[in-house]
Length: 407
Image (cartoon, rainbow, N blue to C red; front, side, top):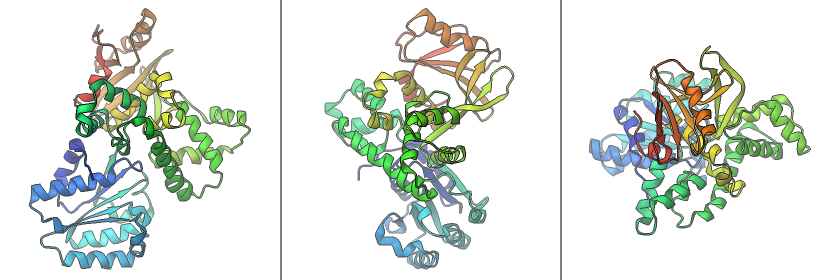
Protein backbone atom coordinates (compact mmCIF):
# COMPACT_ATOMS: atom_id res chain seq x y z
CA UNK A 1 0.00 0.00 0.00
CA UNK A 2 1.37 3.41 -1.03
CA UNK A 3 0.57 5.91 1.72
CA UNK A 4 0.50 9.64 1.09
CA UNK A 5 1.55 11.74 4.06
CA UNK A 6 -1.24 13.89 5.49
CA UNK A 7 0.66 16.01 8.04
CA UNK A 8 -2.23 18.38 8.81
CA UNK A 9 -4.40 15.44 9.84
CA UNK A 10 -1.65 13.85 11.92
CA UNK A 11 -1.09 17.16 13.70
CA UNK A 12 -4.72 17.10 14.85
CA UNK A 13 -4.26 13.72 16.53
CA UNK A 14 -0.80 14.04 18.09
CA UNK A 15 -1.89 15.95 21.23
CA UNK A 16 -4.25 13.06 22.03
CA UNK A 17 -1.91 10.08 21.69
CA UNK A 18 -2.49 7.68 24.61
CA UNK A 19 -4.66 10.14 26.54
CA UNK A 20 -7.53 7.72 27.15
CA UNK A 21 -9.97 9.41 24.76
CA UNK A 22 -11.65 7.49 21.96
CA UNK A 23 -10.60 8.91 18.61
CA UNK A 24 -13.56 8.88 16.20
CA UNK A 25 -12.65 9.40 12.54
CA UNK A 26 -15.54 10.17 10.19
CA UNK A 27 -15.77 11.16 6.55
CA UNK A 28 -16.88 10.24 3.06
CA UNK A 29 -16.44 6.60 2.06
CA UNK A 30 -13.07 6.09 0.33
CA UNK A 31 -11.78 9.49 1.44
CA UNK A 32 -8.72 7.97 3.11
CA UNK A 33 -9.84 7.02 6.63
CA UNK A 34 -8.31 3.53 6.50
CA UNK A 35 -5.03 4.85 5.10
CA UNK A 36 -4.98 7.47 7.86
CA UNK A 37 -5.16 4.67 10.43
CA UNK A 38 -1.93 3.22 9.03
CA UNK A 39 -0.29 6.65 8.96
CA UNK A 40 -1.25 7.11 12.61
CA UNK A 41 0.13 3.70 13.54
CA UNK A 42 3.45 4.49 11.87
CA UNK A 43 3.61 7.88 13.59
CA UNK A 44 2.78 6.44 17.02
CA UNK A 45 5.29 3.64 16.54
CA UNK A 46 8.07 6.13 15.80
CA UNK A 47 7.17 8.80 18.34
CA UNK A 48 6.26 6.60 21.30
CA UNK A 49 8.58 3.66 20.58
CA UNK A 50 5.81 1.09 20.24
CA UNK A 51 6.45 -2.35 18.69
CA UNK A 52 4.59 -3.06 15.45
CA UNK A 53 2.93 -6.07 17.12
CA UNK A 54 1.04 -3.71 19.41
CA UNK A 55 -1.19 -2.38 16.60
CA UNK A 56 -4.45 -4.14 15.76
CA UNK A 57 -6.47 -3.33 12.63
CA UNK A 58 -10.03 -4.60 12.18
CA UNK A 59 -12.10 -3.58 9.14
CA UNK A 60 -15.73 -4.53 9.65
CA UNK A 61 -16.49 -4.49 5.95
CA UNK A 62 -14.35 -7.65 5.79
CA UNK A 63 -16.76 -10.58 5.61
CA UNK A 64 -14.17 -12.65 7.45
CA UNK A 65 -14.82 -10.57 10.58
CA UNK A 66 -18.58 -11.10 10.53
CA UNK A 67 -18.48 -13.02 13.83
CA UNK A 68 -16.91 -9.99 15.54
CA UNK A 69 -19.81 -7.70 14.65
CA UNK A 70 -21.62 -9.03 17.73
CA UNK A 71 -20.72 -6.92 20.78
CA UNK A 72 -19.91 -9.81 23.14
CA UNK A 73 -17.62 -11.47 20.60
CA UNK A 74 -15.76 -8.25 19.82
CA UNK A 75 -15.38 -7.40 23.51
CA UNK A 76 -13.88 -10.79 24.36
CA UNK A 77 -11.59 -10.72 21.32
CA UNK A 78 -10.21 -7.29 22.23
CA UNK A 79 -9.57 -8.26 25.84
CA UNK A 80 -7.65 -11.32 24.66
CA UNK A 81 -5.46 -9.26 22.31
CA UNK A 82 -4.90 -6.62 24.98
CA UNK A 83 -3.60 -9.24 27.38
CA UNK A 84 -1.00 -10.32 24.80
CA UNK A 85 0.37 -6.85 24.00
CA UNK A 86 4.08 -6.27 24.58
CA UNK A 87 3.57 -2.69 25.80
CA UNK A 88 0.19 -1.03 25.14
CA UNK A 89 -2.18 -2.09 22.37
CA UNK A 90 -3.49 0.47 19.89
CA UNK A 91 -6.73 -0.68 18.25
CA UNK A 92 -8.10 0.61 14.95
CA UNK A 93 -11.74 -0.34 14.31
CA UNK A 94 -12.65 0.54 10.72
CA UNK A 95 -16.28 1.13 9.60
CA UNK A 96 -17.45 0.60 13.16
CA UNK A 97 -21.10 1.29 12.31
CA UNK A 98 -21.31 -2.34 11.15
CA UNK A 99 -20.89 -3.50 14.77
CA UNK A 100 -24.02 -3.72 16.88
CA UNK A 101 -23.88 -1.56 20.05
CA UNK A 102 -20.29 -0.62 19.31
CA UNK A 103 -20.33 2.30 21.76
CA UNK A 104 -20.94 -0.08 24.66
CA UNK A 105 -17.99 -2.25 23.66
CA UNK A 106 -15.65 0.68 23.12
CA UNK A 107 -16.63 2.37 26.36
CA UNK A 108 -16.10 -0.83 28.36
CA UNK A 109 -12.59 -1.20 26.93
CA UNK A 110 -11.86 2.49 27.46
CA UNK A 111 -12.95 2.25 31.10
CA UNK A 112 -10.24 -0.35 31.73
CA UNK A 113 -7.53 2.07 30.47
CA UNK A 114 -5.65 -0.81 28.91
CA UNK A 115 -5.36 0.29 25.27
CA UNK A 116 -5.95 3.16 22.86
CA UNK A 117 -8.88 3.02 20.47
CA UNK A 118 -9.49 4.66 17.10
CA UNK A 119 -12.74 4.07 15.24
CA UNK A 120 -13.85 5.13 11.78
CA UNK A 121 -17.26 5.47 10.17
CA UNK A 122 -18.90 6.88 7.07
CA UNK A 123 -21.77 8.70 8.73
CA UNK A 124 -21.82 12.05 10.51
CA UNK A 125 -24.32 10.69 13.04
CA UNK A 126 -21.84 8.14 14.37
CA UNK A 127 -21.87 9.80 17.78
CA UNK A 128 -25.45 11.01 17.85
CA UNK A 129 -27.43 7.90 18.80
CA UNK A 130 -28.69 7.03 22.25
CA UNK A 131 -25.82 4.64 22.88
CA UNK A 132 -23.37 7.44 22.12
CA UNK A 133 -24.17 8.92 25.53
CA UNK A 134 -21.71 6.34 26.83
CA UNK A 135 -18.93 8.30 25.12
CA UNK A 136 -20.02 11.82 26.07
CA UNK A 137 -16.91 13.75 27.03
CA UNK A 138 -14.74 10.70 26.38
CA UNK A 139 -14.22 11.01 22.63
CA UNK A 140 -12.92 13.44 20.04
CA UNK A 141 -14.18 13.42 16.46
CA UNK A 142 -12.14 14.35 13.38
CA UNK A 143 -13.52 14.45 9.85
CA UNK A 144 -11.39 13.23 6.94
CA UNK A 145 -11.85 14.80 3.51
CA UNK A 146 -10.67 13.71 0.06
CA UNK A 147 -7.22 14.96 -0.89
CA UNK A 148 -6.73 18.69 -1.00
CA UNK A 149 -4.99 20.02 -4.08
CA UNK A 150 -1.73 20.16 -2.08
CA UNK A 151 -2.06 16.50 -1.06
CA UNK A 152 -3.11 15.44 -4.56
CA UNK A 153 -0.07 17.23 -6.00
CA UNK A 154 2.32 15.49 -3.61
CA UNK A 155 0.81 12.09 -4.45
CA UNK A 156 0.99 12.57 -8.22
CA UNK A 157 4.56 13.86 -8.09
CA UNK A 158 5.65 10.94 -5.93
CA UNK A 159 4.15 8.37 -8.30
CA UNK A 160 4.89 9.99 -11.69
CA UNK A 161 7.62 12.54 -11.01
CA UNK A 162 9.42 12.16 -14.34
CA UNK A 163 6.30 12.08 -16.50
CA UNK A 164 4.07 14.83 -15.18
CA UNK A 165 4.16 18.62 -14.95
CA UNK A 166 2.63 21.01 -12.43
CA UNK A 167 0.26 22.28 -15.12
CA UNK A 168 -0.90 18.73 -15.84
CA UNK A 169 -1.51 18.04 -12.15
CA UNK A 170 -3.58 21.18 -11.75
CA UNK A 171 -5.71 20.30 -14.77
CA UNK A 172 -6.15 16.77 -13.44
CA UNK A 173 -7.32 18.02 -10.06
CA UNK A 174 -9.59 20.60 -11.62
CA UNK A 175 -11.23 17.91 -13.72
CA UNK A 176 -11.17 14.78 -11.56
CA UNK A 177 -11.05 16.00 -7.98
CA UNK A 178 -9.15 14.54 -5.05
CA UNK A 179 -10.52 11.10 -4.17
CA UNK A 180 -7.40 9.22 -2.99
CA UNK A 181 -8.16 6.13 -5.07
CA UNK A 182 -7.59 7.88 -8.40
CA UNK A 183 -4.04 9.11 -7.85
CA UNK A 184 -2.49 5.79 -8.88
CA UNK A 185 -3.83 5.95 -12.45
CA UNK A 186 -1.24 7.20 -14.97
CA UNK A 187 -4.10 8.41 -17.19
CA UNK A 188 -6.90 9.89 -15.14
CA UNK A 189 -9.39 9.64 -17.99
CA UNK A 190 -10.01 6.10 -16.71
CA UNK A 191 -10.91 7.46 -13.26
CA UNK A 192 -14.55 7.96 -14.24
CA UNK A 193 -15.36 4.28 -13.75
CA UNK A 194 -13.76 4.24 -10.30
CA UNK A 195 -15.54 7.43 -9.21
CA UNK A 196 -18.91 6.16 -10.41
CA UNK A 197 -18.37 2.92 -8.46
CA UNK A 198 -17.46 4.83 -5.30
CA UNK A 199 -20.45 7.13 -5.70
CA UNK A 200 -22.83 4.21 -6.12
CA UNK A 201 -21.25 2.43 -3.18
CA UNK A 202 -22.02 5.46 -1.01
CA UNK A 203 -25.59 5.51 -2.31
CA UNK A 204 -26.03 1.81 -1.59
CA UNK A 205 -24.20 1.26 1.70
CA UNK A 206 -24.35 4.63 3.44
CA UNK A 207 -27.71 5.92 2.27
CA UNK A 208 -30.04 3.34 0.69
CA UNK A 209 -29.31 0.49 3.12
CA UNK A 210 -28.90 2.67 6.19
CA UNK A 211 -32.15 4.55 5.64
CA UNK A 212 -34.08 1.67 4.06
CA UNK A 213 -34.75 3.66 0.89
CA UNK A 214 -36.64 1.78 -1.82
CA UNK A 215 -37.10 4.45 -4.48
CA UNK A 216 -33.47 4.39 -5.59
CA UNK A 217 -34.21 5.94 -8.99
CA UNK A 218 -35.70 9.00 -7.31
CA UNK A 219 -32.75 9.22 -4.96
CA UNK A 220 -30.25 9.06 -7.83
CA UNK A 221 -32.09 11.69 -9.85
CA UNK A 222 -32.28 14.01 -6.83
CA UNK A 223 -28.55 13.72 -6.23
CA UNK A 224 -27.79 14.13 -9.93
CA UNK A 225 -29.61 17.45 -9.81
CA UNK A 226 -27.51 18.51 -6.80
CA UNK A 227 -24.30 17.57 -8.63
CA UNK A 228 -25.28 19.80 -11.54
CA UNK A 229 -26.32 22.69 -9.30
CA UNK A 230 -23.24 23.02 -7.04
CA UNK A 231 -22.77 26.61 -5.96
CA UNK A 232 -26.32 27.58 -6.87
CA UNK A 233 -29.08 28.23 -4.38
CA UNK A 234 -31.56 25.38 -4.33
CA UNK A 235 -34.91 24.72 -2.65
CA UNK A 236 -37.29 21.79 -2.35
CA UNK A 237 -39.46 23.58 -4.92
CA UNK A 238 -36.64 23.71 -7.46
CA UNK A 239 -35.83 20.02 -6.95
CA UNK A 240 -39.48 19.05 -7.23
CA UNK A 241 -39.76 21.07 -10.45
CA UNK A 242 -36.76 19.24 -11.88
CA UNK A 243 -38.15 15.82 -10.91
CA UNK A 244 -41.51 16.74 -12.41
CA UNK A 245 -39.76 17.58 -15.69
CA UNK A 246 -38.42 14.03 -15.60
CA UNK A 247 -41.94 12.73 -14.89
CA UNK A 248 -40.99 11.76 -11.34
CA UNK A 249 -42.77 12.71 -8.13
CA UNK A 250 -41.53 12.76 -4.57
CA UNK A 251 -43.23 13.86 -1.36
CA UNK A 252 -41.76 16.89 0.40
CA UNK A 253 -40.96 14.89 3.56
CA UNK A 254 -39.17 12.19 1.57
CA UNK A 255 -37.20 14.80 -0.35
CA UNK A 256 -36.03 16.42 2.89
CA UNK A 257 -35.04 12.97 4.17
CA UNK A 258 -32.95 12.44 1.03
CA UNK A 259 -31.18 15.77 1.49
CA UNK A 260 -30.44 15.00 5.14
CA UNK A 261 -29.17 11.51 4.29
CA UNK A 262 -26.73 12.94 1.74
CA UNK A 263 -25.28 15.31 4.31
CA UNK A 264 -25.02 12.56 6.94
CA UNK A 265 -23.05 10.43 4.46
CA UNK A 266 -20.73 13.41 3.76
CA UNK A 267 -21.79 13.56 0.10
CA UNK A 268 -23.10 17.11 0.34
CA UNK A 269 -22.10 20.28 2.14
CA UNK A 270 -24.98 22.64 2.90
CA UNK A 271 -24.20 26.36 3.18
CA UNK A 272 -26.87 28.73 4.47
CA UNK A 273 -26.89 32.46 3.84
CA UNK A 274 -26.43 35.54 6.00
CA UNK A 275 -27.21 39.22 5.51
CA UNK A 276 -23.74 40.76 5.83
CA UNK A 277 -25.22 44.05 7.04
CA UNK A 278 -28.22 43.00 9.12
CA UNK A 279 -26.65 39.69 10.22
CA UNK A 280 -29.91 37.79 9.68
CA UNK A 281 -29.55 34.12 8.81
CA UNK A 282 -31.03 33.20 5.41
CA UNK A 283 -32.00 29.54 5.72
CA UNK A 284 -34.25 29.38 2.69
CA UNK A 285 -32.66 28.21 -0.55
CA UNK A 286 -29.20 27.19 0.73
CA UNK A 287 -26.28 26.37 -1.50
CA UNK A 288 -25.23 22.73 -1.84
CA UNK A 289 -21.67 21.64 -2.66
CA UNK A 290 -20.48 18.10 -3.39
CA UNK A 291 -17.83 16.41 -1.26
CA UNK A 292 -15.61 15.97 -4.29
CA UNK A 293 -16.11 17.70 -7.61
CA UNK A 294 -14.71 14.70 -9.48
CA UNK A 295 -18.10 13.01 -9.13
CA UNK A 296 -19.58 15.66 -11.45
CA UNK A 297 -17.08 14.80 -14.17
CA UNK A 298 -17.62 11.07 -13.71
CA UNK A 299 -21.34 11.38 -14.44
CA UNK A 300 -21.42 14.44 -16.73
CA UNK A 301 -18.34 14.19 -18.92
CA UNK A 302 -16.77 17.56 -19.62
CA UNK A 303 -18.98 19.38 -17.13
CA UNK A 304 -16.16 20.57 -14.88
CA UNK A 305 -14.43 22.42 -17.70
CA UNK A 306 -17.71 23.76 -19.08
CA UNK A 307 -18.81 25.05 -15.68
CA UNK A 308 -15.44 26.05 -14.29
CA UNK A 309 -16.77 28.84 -12.03
CA UNK A 310 -19.03 26.34 -10.26
CA UNK A 311 -16.14 23.91 -9.85
CA UNK A 312 -13.77 26.56 -8.49
CA UNK A 313 -16.39 27.62 -5.97
CA UNK A 314 -16.86 23.99 -4.94
CA UNK A 315 -13.10 23.57 -4.51
CA UNK A 316 -12.87 26.65 -2.30
CA UNK A 317 -15.90 25.57 -0.23
CA UNK A 318 -14.39 22.17 0.54
CA UNK A 319 -10.92 23.65 1.15
CA UNK A 320 -12.19 26.23 3.63
CA UNK A 321 -14.19 23.54 5.42
CA UNK A 322 -11.13 21.27 5.47
CA UNK A 323 -9.18 24.11 7.09
CA UNK A 324 -11.76 24.42 9.85
CA UNK A 325 -13.81 27.41 8.68
CA UNK A 326 -17.59 27.34 9.05
CA UNK A 327 -19.28 28.74 5.97
CA UNK A 328 -22.26 30.81 4.94
CA UNK A 329 -22.85 32.76 1.77
CA UNK A 330 -23.46 36.48 2.08
CA UNK A 331 -25.94 39.06 0.88
CA UNK A 332 -25.31 42.81 0.73
CA UNK A 333 -28.49 44.41 -0.58
CA UNK A 334 -28.76 42.89 -4.06
CA UNK A 335 -25.08 41.89 -4.18
CA UNK A 336 -23.66 38.48 -3.33
CA UNK A 337 -20.64 37.30 -1.33
CA UNK A 338 -19.67 33.72 -2.07
CA UNK A 339 -18.44 32.86 1.44
CA UNK A 340 -18.62 34.39 4.89
CA UNK A 341 -16.13 32.19 6.75
CA UNK A 342 -15.77 32.06 10.54
CA UNK A 343 -13.17 30.31 12.70
CA UNK A 344 -12.10 30.83 16.32
CA UNK A 345 -13.68 34.28 16.59
CA UNK A 346 -12.28 35.44 13.27
CA UNK A 347 -14.12 36.20 10.05
CA UNK A 348 -13.14 36.34 6.39
CA UNK A 349 -15.14 37.27 3.30
CA UNK A 350 -14.27 35.34 0.13
CA UNK A 351 -15.22 35.80 -3.51
CA UNK A 352 -14.39 33.16 -6.14
CA UNK A 353 -14.29 33.67 -9.89
CA UNK A 354 -12.55 32.24 -12.94
CA UNK A 355 -10.85 35.36 -14.31
CA UNK A 356 -11.16 39.09 -13.62
CA UNK A 357 -11.35 39.65 -17.34
CA UNK A 358 -13.66 42.64 -17.68
CA UNK A 359 -14.80 45.78 -15.89
CA UNK A 360 -18.16 44.11 -15.33
CA UNK A 361 -16.50 41.16 -13.59
CA UNK A 362 -14.37 43.47 -11.46
CA UNK A 363 -17.48 45.35 -10.37
CA UNK A 364 -19.35 42.12 -9.59
CA UNK A 365 -16.57 40.70 -7.43
CA UNK A 366 -15.22 43.82 -5.69
CA UNK A 367 -18.33 45.90 -5.03
CA UNK A 368 -20.00 43.52 -2.51
CA UNK A 369 -16.82 43.46 -0.43
CA UNK A 370 -16.46 47.23 -0.65
CA UNK A 371 -20.00 47.57 0.74
CA UNK A 372 -19.07 45.66 3.91
CA UNK A 373 -17.74 48.22 6.36
CA UNK A 374 -16.14 46.03 9.02
CA UNK A 375 -12.39 45.37 9.21
CA UNK A 376 -12.31 41.60 8.69
CA UNK A 377 -10.13 40.36 5.79
CA UNK A 378 -11.72 40.39 2.35
CA UNK A 379 -10.30 38.03 -0.27
CA UNK A 380 -10.90 37.45 -3.98
CA UNK A 381 -9.62 34.19 -5.49
CA UNK A 382 -9.27 33.70 -9.24
CA UNK A 383 -6.92 32.07 -11.74
CA UNK A 384 -5.45 35.42 -12.85
CA UNK A 385 -1.68 35.75 -12.68
CA UNK A 386 -1.79 39.55 -12.22
CA UNK A 387 -2.53 40.77 -8.69
CA UNK A 388 -5.55 43.10 -8.62
CA UNK A 389 -5.59 43.87 -4.88
CA UNK A 390 -7.01 47.29 -4.08
CA UNK A 391 -8.78 49.32 -1.37
CA UNK A 392 -7.98 46.81 1.36
CA UNK A 393 -9.35 43.87 -0.65
CA UNK A 394 -6.75 41.17 -1.27
CA UNK A 395 -6.67 39.36 -4.60
CA UNK A 396 -4.79 36.05 -4.84
CA UNK A 397 -4.24 33.34 -7.39
CA UNK A 398 -6.55 30.49 -6.39
CA UNK A 399 -4.14 27.71 -7.34
CA UNK A 400 -1.35 29.22 -5.25
CA UNK A 401 -3.73 29.85 -2.35
CA UNK A 402 -4.59 26.15 -2.29
CA UNK A 403 -0.91 25.27 -1.87
CA UNK A 404 -0.28 27.67 1.01
CA UNK A 405 -1.11 26.92 4.67
CA UNK A 406 -4.07 28.53 6.35
CA UNK A 407 -3.38 31.55 8.54
